[in-house]
View 1 (cartoon, rainbow, N blue to C red):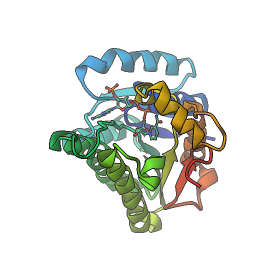
View 2: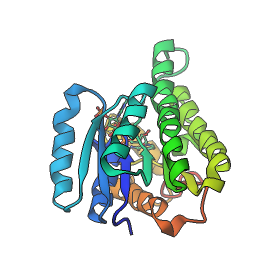
View 3: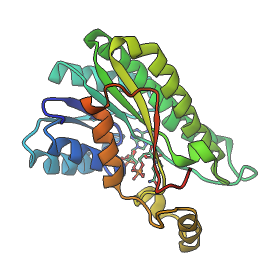
Length: 248
Ligand code: NAP
């Protein structure tokens, strides 16, 4: 399904990004592993070791997605090494939750800088290359709460709703150039990001999920495979919810 393709996955040192990287590699895709800062290089190398088991090529690139310069470098290095970029998965993201009366301006700005502007930075950098290729699959990671909203997450929900707006706008801009742009809206997925929730919070969330369980990183990787492959050639500007029915 992805044999011979080249994919950049931002924030691929752990969680959903790592799982997508492994899944893509298992299907024959060459992988660009992205990590944020020098402290994370060891984790990037662990992911690379796991990926090499599948016999595909890898490239590790340091890039803080909140820096446009880093994102341009990430895309240029990929193009230089592999000659093309077939798939970009804009996955890197953070939370800094608080009720609005306690949320600092700094925490609002940081979440927007990484989740929303970080996605923009990668989209801007990759679009130039994909337009010349006349081919590309872009997958932006939104969230169920970007659709529904969530108390204590005005910064995060604003960033993830923004990602949806950006997905639809870019899909309209570049559709005629053979580029598909879609978003995934995961529900509550078992990763470090949700590990910080209390048992009480998890119980409340489970009550809102018709399938009565949290999702796995594999659940998200599976839909990322579909959207990264040519099986989704006639799908663009869509937001695919993978949330156990939470947002319906
Ligand atoms: P995670 O386990 O916290 O992993 C986040 C990844 O993003 C890490 O690899 C992290 O690198 C990287 N990252 C953070 N800031 C970065 C930056 N400035 N530049 C480059 N990389 C950066 O999170 P996750 O649960 O896998 O979430 C992945 C994506 O799915 C996020 O966009 C998140 O908002 C979204 N999502 C998750 C859930 C969920 O329930 N887990 C639900 C909806 C949406 P470091 O290791 O260096 O920090």
